[in-house]
Image (spheres, rainbow, N blue to C red):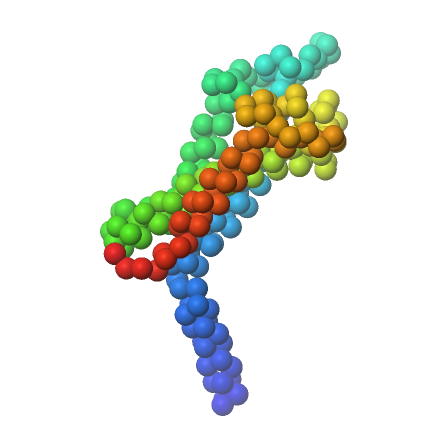
Length: 204
């Protein structure tokens, strides 16, 4: 019995040690960021393999299919630039819900002060930017690693002809390009994450 009690006490001490160095609030911030990243990668998988036509850029005429038997039942048109309806709902809607998870309870229940709500808001901004970036890159990672047989660009990462490279330019690495907006997004996300975690334990 004494041995069991010692193990229980030891386990409790380890948890207290983690809480002492990280704090419950920081653990919440970290877990929210991880969940957001995982969900973004999962949505990219869903988009590439199951949201058929937009993923293969057939609907907007960039890929011409001559086969009369080709299933066009799910063809759609972009509603804003190169964005389809599912980009706004449910993708962006869900991204916002998950990204700002640490902020919703603060707003609804007013458990913490303004300082902590601002930090949670900054975390949400950082998570949202990171989620959009990761989702976009993961889509191309799926195309590169396990391409669909019907994808004419299967086996390729980001290319200059892909829509993601057409907004803020790109850096050409030969076999693939690095879209310029990736760098901008990384910079803004890094600043927002730094601001969210810096002195986030202050009261108020």
